[in-house]
Every structure is written in structure tokens, then in C-alpha cells.
Length: 287
Image (cartoon, rainbow, N blue to C red; front, side, top):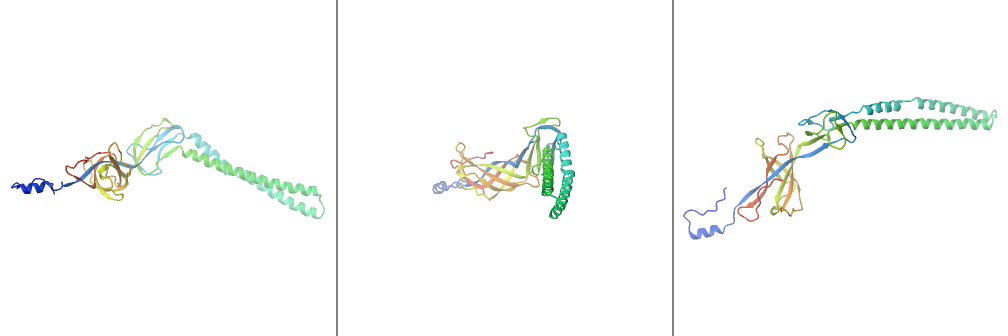
């Protein structure tokens, strides 16, 4: 209902005086806001290299774990093949096992012959020593095979570092590298999660304590054809910025249908009220 502070035209002095004493009408306080992606990741590489292929471009939708770019990895692929061949090798272990089996049989025969006093103590000690050495040789061969398996895993991990993957479902919002470029410290791509959005609002300090976490409020993007939808308050700053005399509020908005564009300015009604003509009322402000 519109706020009308004018007295009826057939005004009497008494009626005018009573009207002037009435409190000013309250109106809804609509605040400017900014819609941002819930997550933004700059995709870089943990190792220096030359870009071999860029598999996505700006605007492409990507899934978590999807390859985005590949660096040259000829050396790493060769290392993987070599390490896997060593890890699969069984010759050294098989030979050590055969030697140990033979040494065990010789020791058993030596002990039987020594019990019947057909061989000396020195011959028996020699057979037992050969058994111990054979057992140690088998252990050494098995340890070496374990080292080769670890080297194979390491070589495979280094190869995987040459393929950059998306950390979550989202959209490629920027591409900063091309095939043939050497990359090391700077990111190659920027990916944003637009299925979940954040709404950042700057609220006048006079409204502190009026916004509650968990409350739902309508948010309207300043984009033609985009309908308003509700967002949930997830964070209310507990510190007021002294310079602007404001505090920040963050809301979470579900955008699984991707109908609301990230980066758009918006208007939000937090259910606050401002008194018309009152001192200290703040206008809308976009963060």
C-alpha cells in the first residue's frame, strides 16, 4: 500500500497536527548484490613442460576428472614402459627360489650323512652356510622386485602429472595457453562451478543483527529474462567495516539448471525495512 503522508484535503488544524505526529511509513529495503561462482580453480601444472594438446576451450562444460590439457610426455612414457618391464621380471626371483630349494635338499642330505658319520662337521657347516646364503639371495631378489614395482608406480605418477584434469564439474571460463607453449608457473585454464552460486551483499550497519543465517530470500539478477529465485544465507560477517559503515552477507543459490549467469549484478530483498525519510538510511550498493 503506498505511503501517503498528506492529510485529507478538507483538512482541519487538529487533523493536520495528529497526522504530523504519526511515525513515518516503513518501506522494504532492496540491496544491490553480485552473483559469483561457488568455486573457481586456476588449473596449473606441477611440472614444467610444453603443451602438446589443449582438449577444451572457453565456454566448454567439463566433468570432474575430465582431461583438459596434455603436456609432452615422451620421456615419461618410455620410463613407464621400462619400469613396468622390470617390475614384471621374475627371472631373478625364480632363480633364487631354485637355488634355495637345492640348498635345502643338500643340507638335509648332509645332516643325514653327518648323523651316520659319513661326512665331517666342516662339510655339514658348509651345507648349512650355503642354505643361509641361498635364503638371503632370495630375499634380496624379492626386495629388488619390490623396488622395481615402486619405481613403476613413481613413473606412472609422473606421467599422470602431464595430463591436467578438472577438479570438479563446471565451465571453462578462460584459456591462457596454446599448444607448443612452455608452461611452468602460470595457470593454463580457469574453471568455475556455476551449478552452485554465491550472492555477495553489502548491508548497512544500521541493519546489523537483522539478517539470520539459514534464512531464504529472493534474488533477482539484473539480466532480462532471468526470473528471481531464492537463496539461503550462509554467512553473516560479525565485523563491521568502519570506513563504509557496512557489513557483508553471503547467500548460496542452487543453479543446477544454469539459468542464472554467474558474474551478474542483482537485487536482493533480505526482509529488512527502512523508514522513509529517516536519517542514516542507506541506498543500494553492489559489492
